[in-house]
Length: 214
Image (cartoon, rainbow, N blue to C red; front, side):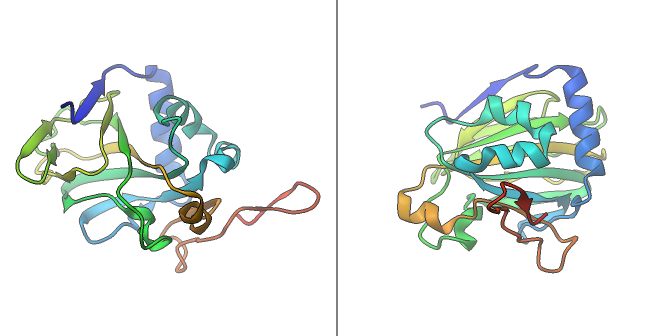
């Protein structure tokens, strides 16, 4: 069984450089809104349904090439987050279920995709550890411009970074939900600690076709 797959040199260096700049300069980028498993990390999150992908691409056009490459056709709901680790950062063992705050019965994602946007040359630590219930099935050292896919039901963690700043990745949890579950998921919204309410503002279209909200 293949628990994960890696695709090196997935994008052009120009795109990768622009992606990094847009993420780091995004107004929502700050101390992470993720749970306590994510120690000393930064980022923000997007929640969206496939039906509203065009809104994501409208407000965050720099994610479009990544999403075009990474999104699985059978998935219909997504949790996308840039993730910055630096010296002293780590991610404790967990199974992704970030949409559970909207739908309590949700299963883990079908797949998780990770693009390593920036990996410092002097990085020590920061390896991704993948575990099935009984054993370790992967230890992946981050490589810049590598696109990684791993099974969404695996327990995973990131080893402490002991040297090297700005290990930046772009992570997408990809879910296959039934109709009732999908109704519980926002069409499109941003989560960020920039706003005390985590910017949980649903993108809505008024009768004139104008996007309201963010």
